[in-house]
Structure formats: structure tokens, C-alpha cells
Length: 184
Image 1: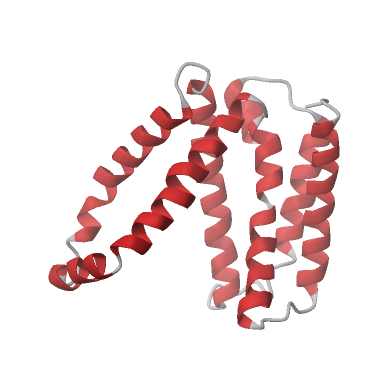
Image 2: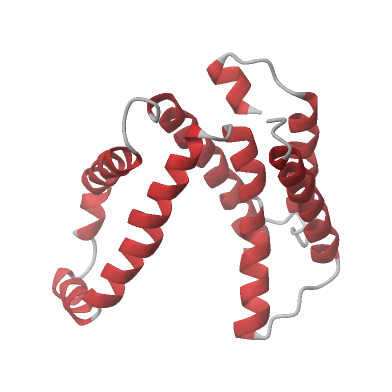
């Protein structure tokens, strides 16, 4: 929904419909509308995160034609490191340094695989897909989290989660078929 507004492009009705279907699917993941409920609070924070993530993606889309994905991700990581560096000084710095030294290989692996390589490839996909398509496909993230919770934590999805998951899945499947046919 944000991409046509910011990039001054004509919105496509199917993209707007699929965006609302996916959002409505996320709505079903909320057990009740009480911010003292951790799941509801998590979904609200997730929606705020998705909005800022979409804005970030749109800004990167503006530059992906002129710069490599590696350069864009490097600039983003440097900027975020500077912005978030004060957080490092909260709490017990010696304990934080000890934890970093103890887990350096895990942090390096996680940083390389999910941030450096994963996000660089993600940003490079902006050359071939609209942010709207990428955003709709990204709504699979909560379903992946639910699936991983089921596999590793024996958490069984309850009630409306199945309805929400089905709506999100329908939006993603329709978008996948639409994109595969080149009607993006």
C-alpha cells in the first residue's frame, strides 16, 4: 500500500486486495485485543516493525538500480551500528563483552547467514520484484515462526491461528502465481 504512494506509481487492485487479505490473516493471529496479552503485544509490535521494514525496503528500492546490494547492506549496517551503539553501554559492559567473546562464532555465523548474505540477496531481489510483491511474500514470516514453534517447541496452533494462516497462505500463493506469470 505504501509503495504506490511513495514511488508515485499506479496502485494495482489485486495487490491492494492481497495486502488486505494477508493483513486480515495476521489479525486472526491475535488471541484478543488486550495489550497486556504478550501475543497481542507481539503482533502490534510486529505490525509496526513491518511498516518500518516496508519503508526501508522502498528506500532501498530507490537505490538498488545504482548500487550493489552489498554496498546498500554495508551502508545500512554501519548506520544502524552507529545509531544503536549507545545500547551497548547499558547494563554490565564486562558481562556483555564476556558473552560476545564466549559466543563470537555463533554471532558471526548468524550475522553472516541471516544479515549479510540473506539480506543482501533480499535487497538484490528488489531489482526484479516490486516492494508490494516482496511484502506480500514476506507475510509468510509469522507462519514460519508458528511452524518452527510447532517443530521445536511442541506448540500447537490454536483456533483462529489456522484461519489466519490460511488467509496468509492464500495471499502468498496467489501472489506467487501472479508473479510467476510475469504480471507484476
